[in-house]
Length: 171
Image (cartoon, rainbow, N blue to C red):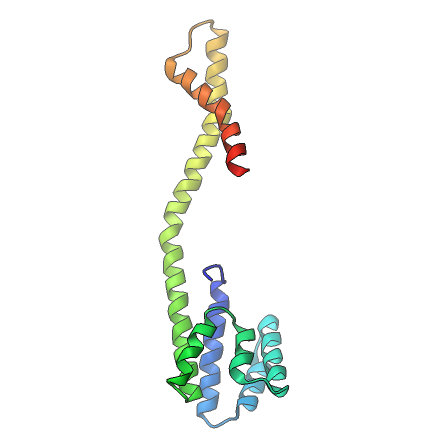
């Protein structure tokens, strides 16, 4: 579930807050959903809200229709509805859950960004070394008819085995 885009979780949390507020002021569920549908600028989410209204109109319960809007951990969160029979209160708790989830995803991505950048730079440096610098050193020593240093010979051996290693590692 970590691969769910952060903006989708944020959008769903905001949807829950808006729906909760509309229900608290006394609107019916259908009226609140229609208002949210009319005010939604995102066409993808607008379609999801429209499908939610259609599912409710066809007789499906609100909670089962909501799973189509935002699947995944939502079904785990529905277990708490028996503890809070008040729908606006449940929507408030649901939005808090998704806000916390977004916060933790952003925190995780901020923590992993630096090591990931270092690994990519290291791969780039190794590629640069093995593809450009090593052949230059090899040609220099072969043209000067001198014996290559031991470390250079070991690096040449490593370079010859790298493609074989990666091909067998991917299979």
